[in-house]
Amino acid sequence: MKKEITNEILMEAAASFATQGEVKSCERYGNGHINDTFLLTCDRRYILQRMNTEVFQNPQALMENIEGVTSYLRQSVIKNGGDPDREALTLVRAKDGKSFYVDSQGGYWRVYLFIENATGYDQVKNPDDFYQSGCSFGRFQGLLAGYPADKLWETIPDFHNTPKRFETFKKAVEEDVCGRAANVQEEIAFVMDRAEKMGTAQRMLSQGELPLRVTHNDTKLNNILIDDATGKGLCVIDLDTVMPGLSIFDYGDSIRFGANTAAEDEPDASKASLSLPLFEAYTKGFLEGCGKDLTENEIRMLPWGAYLMTLECGTRFLTDYLQGDTYFHVAREGHNLDRCRTQFALVKDMEKKWGQMEDIVAHCMKI
Ligand code: ADP
Ligand code: GN1
Ligand code: MG
Image (tube, rainbow, N blue to C red; front, side, top):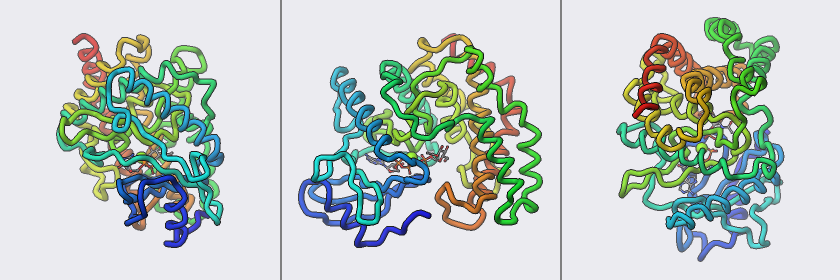
């Protein structure tokens, strides 16, 4: 069980890093589902995070990855003449020189410089922002191609192994620890009906038809900061899941979150659908960012990336609902079930719009 964060622990953690000046305030920040994130104000602002060690069971390995990836990205930004403190995450060391601090209850903490005058959006407000995020995640994909995969720990094994996610789901249905399965028969059947499809990308990977690359693996819109002044994608954040994966999943997870006409946790799932203009905007940006580096199979399979990420994520939300909401942060009863329903509504709509999705990808590839 995750330990509660008392004010004493928060202050202990905040005071343990080599920040500039005294701690003035520290409050919860952002809408991430995994880590505990705080805005820490001293003479300048910082992001203070307690890492979720139930999700990331080897926090030292996680931080080795983050140190390696952030310094690699920093060098790339410098090489391209950019501002490394705004276009890459910058770790602030603990007073003992380590990149993390372990509190007196065993919690793992880290600090980043806060990137000012930039926003991580929870919903697309303007199609150009989404196009910009496609360009940035596409370029990020291209950049990571130069990062040595053998230097990366797998922070969550089988993270996007959809058939394994399906097996975990089936076990959760059988065990039904909270007695919730009876209420969600329709959602359970929805997953069961698509069991065969869930293995599509994994099969292609194991047959060498899709390459394993270094990928971000969690490319939702609020994991990129958009510059308030220029409206351009500024910095890709939330690097905890950078590890070998499929490019179509980086593309697909962005579509899942950003091209949905409803918020991920909209209680009225009938509002969820695939916005084709947003699908097109992102596809254009992503392909501009890294299209030249992708294989023909990867490009052809982009709609599958979107479909499988949505189906997988909905299945994960349903699994967590069945298991008693232990993985994703929840703010209300039925929160994970609402999230699951918006994902499944989006899956259904993608099934209807499949031909249009394929046409848009083909069209964006030509221009
Ligand atoms: P989680 O894994 O829980 O999603 P994130 O690392 O994505 O945690 O952080 C949560 C939120 O905090 C982000 O969506 C973003 O709004 C904000 N955030 C994280 N890092 C920074 C940063 N360096 N500068 C400004 N905002 C940040
Ligand atoms: C989590 O950490 P965050 O909130 O950016 C999750 C993703 C899900 C997403 C659904 C490590 O992302 O895999 O797609 O929620 N991250 C992890 O919103 O499990
Ligand atoms: Mg995040």
